[in-house]
Image 1 (cartoon, one colour):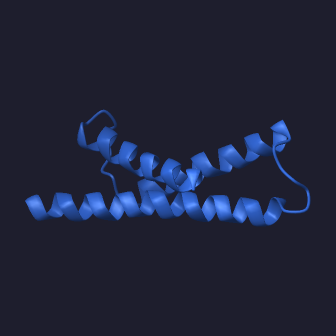
Image 2 (cartoon, one colour; image 1 turned 135 degrees about the vertical axis):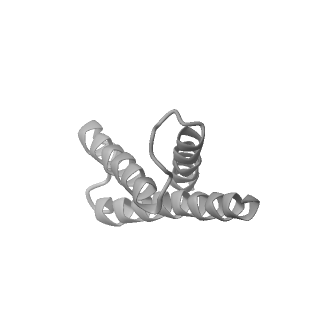
Image 3 (spheres, helix red, strand yellow; image 1 turned 60 degrees about the vertical axis):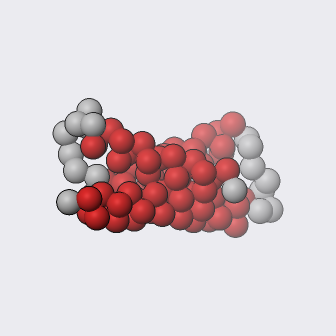
Length: 88
């Protein structure tokens, strides 16, 4: 569940930084996916190096973590994109 909320916050953060012109790009699907991919892969590598995994369930746990992270981030992206496009 925490990975879902982390992905959601990443999606919100990408939109906030892009809409406030702090980062000079548009918050497209590709940008959101790349940010979520970097964060989730980085987190899983950290878990591996820190020994925060169980050998028997590592593959399933990693797949679930990545799926939940992407679910939250993409949900945030699609909701914010829809809300922004309604105002135009």
